[in-house]
Length: 349
Image 1: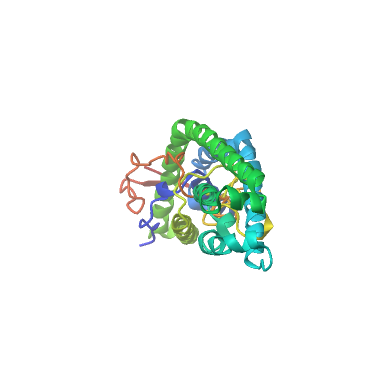
Image 2: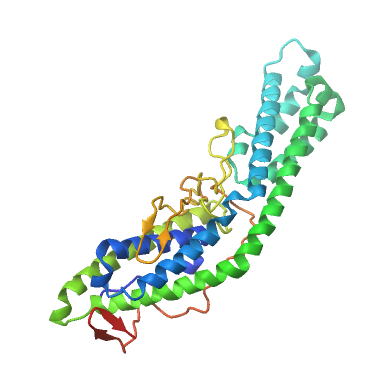
C-alpha cells in the first residue's frame, strides 16, 4: 500500500519549518500535475491559505528588536574578543611584575574557562556565559588587576552590550509570542487540514486498482514518495535543531532557530531570521523562489544557514516558543476515508 509516512508529526515543526514544508508540498503538486493527483479543486484553497501563513510567519523578519539584538550581539562579541586578547598577552609577560602577579589567575580562571568559541554559542547561552565572564573578571582580577590591564571601560561596555541584547531579546520574544499564539496557530491548523485533504485524495488514487485511473495512480505514487522524502528531511532538520538546544519557534526568514554566530573570528554572530538561517535551524523555508501555484503566489526565503535558524539562527532558551499544537488534528494521514468516490478528475470524501 502506498501511504504517507506517519512516524513523524509535522506539528513538531516550528512556524518557519512547517511553512517551508507546506511550500514544498505545493511545489510537488504543481510539478507533478494537480489534475493527475486529483486535487485541482483543493489547490486554490491550499495556495491561498499558504500565502496567508507565509505573510504571517515572515512578518516579524523586519522586527526592530531583531535589529537591536544583532547590533548588541555584534558589539558584545567584539568587546569579548578584545578583552580576551589582552588576557592572552598576560600569558607571555616576562618583565612586568604586575602582569606576572596575575598570570596564573588569568591562565587558570579566565583563558581556560572562557575560550574563543564563546562567540559561536547560541544567543541565550552566550548571554549567560558573558555574565559569568564579567563576574569572574571583577572577582579574579580585582581592582588592581583590572587597572593593570586597563580593562575597566571594556568590562563596563561588555556588561552594557550584554544587557542591551537581553532586553532586546525579551522584547522580540514578547512580540513573536503575541503574533504566533493566535493567528499563526489558526493558520497552521487550517493549512494542516488542507494538507490532509490532499494526502487523503492522493493516497486513495495511488492505491486504486481501476485501470481507468492507472496514470493517476502512477503520478500519485510518485507524489507520495516525494512527500515522504520531505518528511524525512524535515525530521532530520528538527532533530538537528533540537540537538543544538533550540526549542523555539522560528520566524520568517530564519533558520528557525537562531544560532549564535558560527565562527568567532568572523564577528561571532549569525542571526537566523536575517537570511542566515537555521542550521538545524537550517530549516527555514528553503524555497527561495516565488511560485504561482494555482491560486496563490507563494514565496519566501527562509534562512538556510544557521542554523539552525533558524542561528538563523535562534537557539536555546527561547521563552517565546509558544509552539502551536495540532492536537485537534489527530487523524492519521495513513488511513484515508473508505468513503472516497472517484468522480471524473476528483475524489470526494
